Length: 158
Image 1 (cartoon, rainbow, N blue to C red):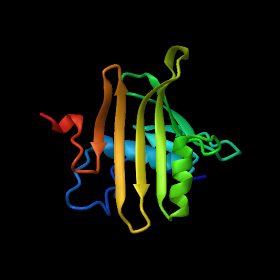
Image 2: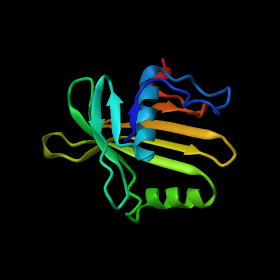
Image 3: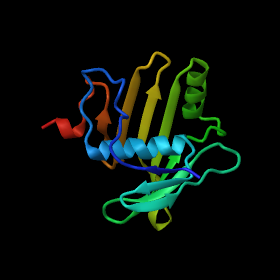
Image 4: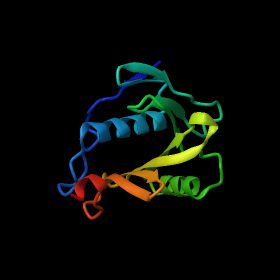
């Protein structure tokens, strides 16, 4: 059984010199995202160990993690067994030698199922990477982080 520890790592290597720097929170988000896609069994996150759910059909992986206010959020990878645009894009990328990954963050508190964010990454066959973290609010989509220096994140606007 393999357990992944979430902490700053080398997830930003192979990004070009124009890529915005990542803070600890961004590195944590990307580490959880990659742990789900790598089909880990357990995850150490902010000092606690969480079981990662990997169903036998292998279509997705998921984990429930608390935010800083103690509310639980479901992190779930794109379900590759469902015929959706996201699944088709991921499967198409694989035929080209790319590793495209989408992880959704869902607010499932109080019996709801509301998408509140996405982590979308791609490791291209030539060694380049793209990374995008978006948050969905009642006011629209907020870019939390992008490896594309042309996309200005909400944190960088001021």
